[in-house]
Length: 320
Image 1 (cartoon, rainbow, N blue to C red):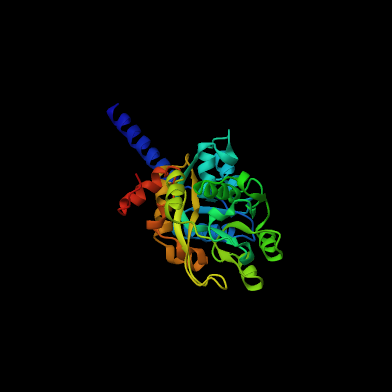
Image 2: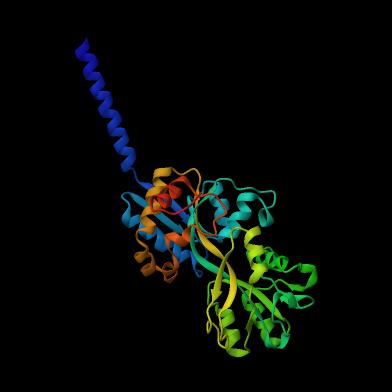
């Protein structure tokens, strides 16, 4: 009888070990939601997926073209994607149920890390006489498409200078339309949140010229303190024709978001693989050159996934 029990225990143990090994070696199929095929998020996400697929056994991550940040966060929240590239300000709105996500809290999203800056670039025409955000009162200002992240950036920055949309003659125009408005004199200034340099502003600088308006001093401090997703940055001199000095600015950050439902060890493994192969990310996409583990823990206002937190703590970074 003892021999039968002993044999049964051995078989059960072997089955459990086989099950555990099978689970560990099982194919892992995930979706990384990105953006439109003509934008930055899609190829950048593809470069991330390639690292995961080549550095982690049995990993199959597909970079999927989408409508970008807001849609991506909803996809994660509904369980239709596990990862996404998003703007960290839009992620903040989604997680806390504010602004464009008012009344719609998406609590199943967490942070792996921030990737690279998307700078809030504020351009004015030379004829406008504008030197500071404080000069915007009564001026014709484009604040991006209605309901866009750019519009919320504009609202928050104006607020830091004691202004609101009621104090300006507001237009909701695309980047291209905004630049054209400055060129033909129907606008005085515009907000554009994008990587530097932006093609619409490059064209404007060559054709009609522009002035970059800084966000600095106490106003910048106040904005960053109230909205934790902003980071301070500088638009270097000569980024655009005729801009001969550095311009202080604020940036939001492209961020790698993840489902809160994913296992800690898997997210740890994926975070480690990504940040230990940044040279390959840089080869896969130019924006990869701007990514680092040290910068990845800045501009974060939505909690880190436990797996990402484990990796960053392991390399000595403060993520508490």
